[in-house]
Length: 204
Image 1 (spheres, rainbow, N blue to C red):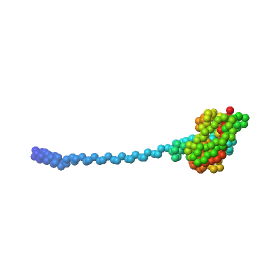
Image 2: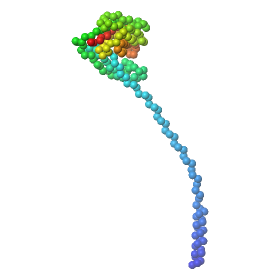
Image 3: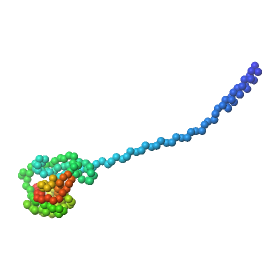
Image 4: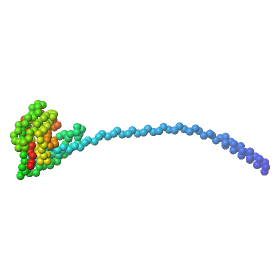
């Protein structure tokens, strides 16, 4: 029995150290991988277009039997700060009431203009007792300055379109100025016209 134990113990020690000698050392750690590339941000979107509103005089006719105002709405696609005729998307009308029974005073004239000169007025009627000085602002655009103030809330203007042009736009600018724009095509302002009738009517 002693002989057997003396043999087993040395064998156990030998196997134990053999196993220790077979276990390998830990390998070195691998290199960390590189961070992924951040995605590119998208490009900024284009600025939106401005929505504009303009008010112009509407002459008596199919839209307003007694005249009134036309309110145009649209986007400023060419970014010039003005609502051009080609940019108008919709229009609404504010019509004057039937003027029967309303009394008024009036200033009526015929306007003529040549080349780059200021318009010249031939006064036909002037119960308002005022005068208007006309100046050419730019091609086809003219500013009339009154020598006194008027009541805008009770005043309307009427004008005709000369046969040499396709359209006229007019508006009161404050209480002592009026502007006329003569067009010969879309957004094409043009000089040289004759016998454009202009009336400024102030109701009492």
